[in-house]
Amino acid sequence: MAEPLVRFEGVRKAYGPAASGYAVRQLDLAVERGELLTLLGPSGSGKTTTLMMLAGFELPSEGRILLEGRDIARLPPHKRGIGVVFQSYALFPHMSVAENVGFPLEVRGVPKAERAGRVAKALAMVRLEGFDERRPAQLSGGQQQRIALARAMVFEPPIVLLDEPLGALDKALREEMQYEIRALHQRLGLTMMYVTHDQAEALTLSDRIAVFEGGLIRQLAPPREIYERPANAFVAGFVGENNRLPGKVLAAEDDLVRVALDCGPEVSARPVDCGPPGSRCCVTIRPERIAVAPVAPEDLGEGALAARLQEAIFQGDHVRLRLSLGQGEEARGEVLVKRPVGGGQLPGIGGPAALAWEAAHALAFAV
Amino acid sequence: MRPARILLWAFGLLALLFLVAPVLAVLPLSFSAGAFLSYPLPGLSLRWYADFWTSNFWLPALWNSLRIGAGAALLAGTFGTLAAFGLWRARFPGRTLVLAVAMAPMVVPAIVVAVALLLAFGPLGLSNSFTGLVLAHATLGMPFVVVTVLAALEQFDPVQLRAAAACGASPVRAFRRVCLPQILPGVAAGALFAFATSLDEVTITLFLAGPAQRTLPRQMFSGLNDQLSLTIMAAAMVMVLLSVLLLLAVTLLRRRGNTSSR
Image (tube, rainbow over all chains, first blue to last red; front, top):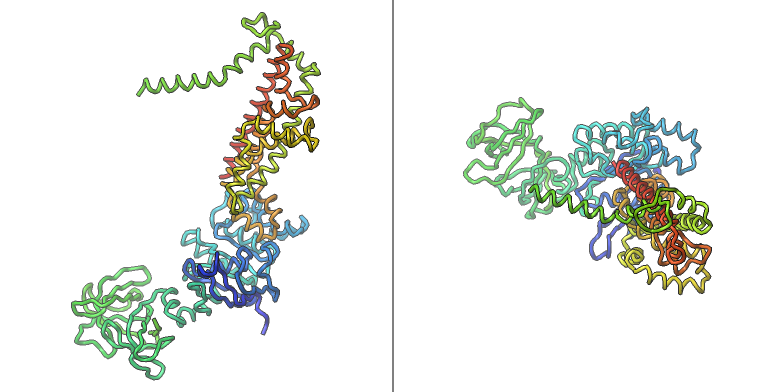
């Protein structure tokens, strides 16, 4: 197997004395050549610290960081040769676009004539040909971000790091830039490490996602696996929308477990990391995996859950349903359902409904 | 409301008049055809300016003032900028103490500095020397540079230094190529203030300057004591003119600094 491009080995990072807690508690992570790896997590989860340690702006308290087999953990940032795109773009306002993009080449002593050619190529890559003489202040946010991207790639670094690069853009532009970054990555075979707290962005862009929480990687897998087979309750809740139904494990049966939900009914679910019978757990089920039918309590089929529709919100391509569990007086928890527009008859608001799903789509986690 | 406004204007105009009155009083005297420091003027002439430009009492002094001022501004600009950058960049223990020491020449009475420098420079062979005077004036001018450069750095985004490092620039190069061009108006304004301070300085010059380093104000001081010639008024006007030019330069820099930072 080929040596990964970057390897974090036993890296820990504490700001201040270690007793005050680690920003990164334990990190062993390999970045493969040519992949786009996203570090996803809430703020304070250690994802940005991880990126900054690789860039050289933070020193790890312990451990090694290997770039192409060489330990760079203590090398100053300007000697690492890694491209970085910052959230605030950090373009140099007193330089033209061409000077900005050419700066890494100027620093490396690339002769002027060759520099011009490479700058033009980099600008073409981000589709900003002919912007050479403009100043950063004359560009829109999206254009500035592309210049920052060109500046980070122009010297052909082994890896480009992106720290929430689209955080300052509006939604439409953000999505456009996501596709553009993905296209660039695929076309050039660039290795990229991308930090974001936006799970939709991570799903769109990544070859693999590392989900961070509390200074640890909670799961490292391709987007689809992260979404469909989350390794723990945190990942199940953080990536995508999910319903969480607390309950107690009753018994294991084949590949499934029976769970007595706190709201009454018993359901089957695929156990992920839940404990033995008798222990507490939670069952998660994606909103788009739940079928809803207008059914009176007495007509409920085997395994269906009784519910009452509280609210139906039209969202264009789908309808969001908010249902309370149980059909009696006492509401015991809420369930969110997404279903395509025109997907059959809906219960009336306040009317009884039956909920059903495939057991394999329900996951049981320890809590 | 209306009378209050009139009162405000009147007070403002009076305050301005109070500030420029000395200059207004000297201005006509320097063009006097007579030889006495008194009004009314017997007639108008440029004889005192002619005297100034041909005198070997005044001209070397003007030349000295300009040279010492330039040297002091250069030194103060360099070290003041570096000090401000360090104080802005690093959060180290004793930072406020260092800042206080850097600003001290602004508040310590000039006479105290003069006596201290006389004692310190003597053994070093720096009293009665051009170098000594430049050093002393640079000390006085440095706080202005620190203040203006710190103000300019407020507008500077420190992430740019990280971006420069990520581009492969060493810290020195990042400072020179990325930070310095953006804070240059602040540096220049501070250096101009330092130049103006040196131009106007008389106390320390009285203590430290030898006959070869007599500056314009120093010469005016002794001119008043020795021979009361109206050439002093011409010299005063030369200083006023220099001050106005400096003030204009600082104003222009301010304007440029404001437009360049968005």
